[in-house]
Length: 300
Length: 285
Image (cartoon, rainbow over all chains, first blue to last red):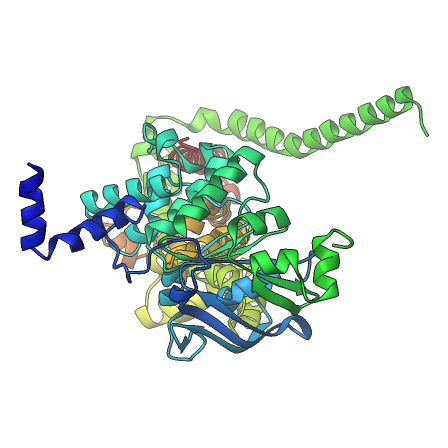
């Protein structure tokens, strides 16, 4: 038997390829997405650092008030970028600029550029709807659509744009709920309303809904701030797994969380980007005194 | 610092004031209902729902007379008006609530409030100029248009506030999964606000259903059923509020009690519409 396998392997050069793709699947990226080939080993792998998004001199104003000013940051593919800083420092404002969420805020103006794969998403010919399909977002508070069942919530992004095939929707629903670590808890009551879930489950439902449309980048605005420690750790586990497939930018108030989940960290203070670097460096050897003061709890 | 007893007493006083004001609100309604029912119930009989009114001599000679044409006319005109007003009114309400950045919006809001505050008879005049004059005849259609003018600004306002009561985060959640704005409004915001939307539409409907003034020179009134069903749209049509008025100012006592009965029917009609709409939009979960 062993001999047989060895002979086949030696004779058929294709086999090793199969083997790798299988091992990649086992690694969690089992879904039928067009993988670019980068595996999700711990994010700091220098060889695979590909820039996915990038901001140049990004400034957001609300009327005459400046939310964030001149922020230039790289966002690497399949890595987690954490945005930290005290309240009102502009991290959420920055995050919302990344998928044109400010378009609907009255009086908000965005200058500078946000590049996704080298193209500015603020160019006039770019359709923000397409951008938001590629760059998903999870909010601070869970936002299940109030009149929809769990199932309809998850597949809303597909169903409401005309995808009606039951088997496709079923598949996506199960996949997204599994990714969001919610499937086991809700599989027997997919038709009960989304709002009947607990807060932590609702937040994971929101994440599942965002994942269902297969975003390439996921923006998370303090996704665990309203959750208990158990739900928080589940979502952090989820971020670790998701990182194999999507690029994540997460805003957090919790510095331990930033340290736990992120590869890179950016520290914001009153609208300015103060410091950016690999998480391990920023938390152990910050260059700026303000960063050090903040992460050691002297203000904020 | 007041003692607990003092605070409890104060709490009781405030509570009784609230109960009192609730009673004051309900009292006129109850008085009207009782009065209308007591006066009109005697005229409610089979003939009332099956016969036309005809000339006053019918009633005076004790021949069968009723308001069947009025009841049918009211249903036709009110629902036609609703049919005309809901898309326009809701459209304006959606615009006000969901596209606050649109440059036409401040104007729209002022115009809408002006239309709402305008005397109803002027809306009848507008419908007269727009529909009656070109058609050359009073018509149910003109009446429906006049009532639609009554409904539109109310529907627009109530739609706006119903949609505004839905948290903005729901819209952002919809946008964040790549839905276009109109789809977010239609499939997530409006279903969530459906209770308020229906309530607002009902308020507009009830308000318009009780209007007589805009119908005076649009649907005009009629003592008989039209010969053809199209006459409900293209000819003069009777409606309950207007008929109530003309029966009340008539010199015949039998017509007076028919007027009270017309009021009962109008009230029951409006209450029935409210109840049905409430039932249809009840919280299913």
